[in-house]
Amino acid sequence: MKKITKLTGALASTALGVSGLAVTASPVAAAHESPPCMTVNSNTTLTANVTGCAGHGIVVTADNITLNLNGFTVSGMKAEQEQAGILLDGVRNVVVRGPGTVTGFDAGVAIEGGSGNTVNGLTVVNNVNDAIEAIDPRSIIVDRTTGPTAEQRAQIARITCNYGDGITTNDSNFNTIKNNRVEANGPYSGISLVGNSNQNTVVRNEVHENDLLNNGVTDGMGNPVFVD
Image (cartoon, rainbow, N blue to C red):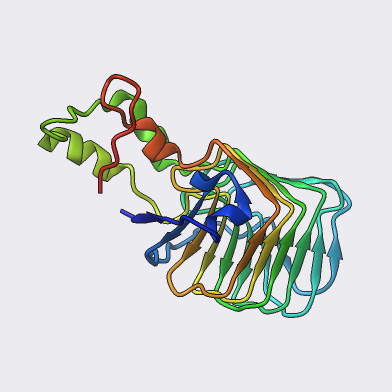
C-alpha cells in the first residue's frame, strides 16, 4: 500500500485543509495499454474539451512550455487503472494553467520526475482510483480495541494503488502547486509529495474532502481508524 505520512505545521498550512496534503513512499510504475488522448510538446491552448480518455488524458513531453486549459475540461472514462488526467513526464519548467477542470482519472495531475513545473488555477475533482470502487471503505468497521481482523486486513490491502490523488509529484523538486481547487479525490490525498520530492511550494489551494481511504474506515461510531 502507498503509505501516507501526514504533514503538520507550516508546510501543511500552505494548503487549505490539512488532511489534503501528504508525503508518501514512492509508487511502482504501472504499464498503460492505451495511448493518451493528447501528447503535448509545444505551447498549447485547448480549444475544446478532451474527453473519453482510456489512458492518460494529456501527456506533456517537452521542457519550457505552457499548457493552457483555457476553461475546458479533461475527463477520463476509467477504462484502465493508473491513469493521470495531465501527466508531466520528466519535464522541466512546464506551466499548466487554468481555468479548467480535470476529472475522472486515477490522479488529476501527476508530475513524474523533472523539476521546476507549475500547476496553477485548475479545478481537480473526482479523480478516484478504481481500487476504491472494488471495496467501499465505509463497509469496513474495525473494533478499536482488538484492531482489524485478518479478513479486514485482507480487504484493506486490496484497496491499494499507485495513483489516488488530485495532484501528485513523484521524485520531482522545485515545483509550484498554487491556486487550485482540489476536491473529492482519492483514496489518498488531495495533494501529495511522493518519494524524493523536495523544495516544492504548495500555496493558496482549496483542498476539501480527499483522502477517501482513511476517511472511510471507522470504528462503527463514526471515528476513523487508520490502518497501515
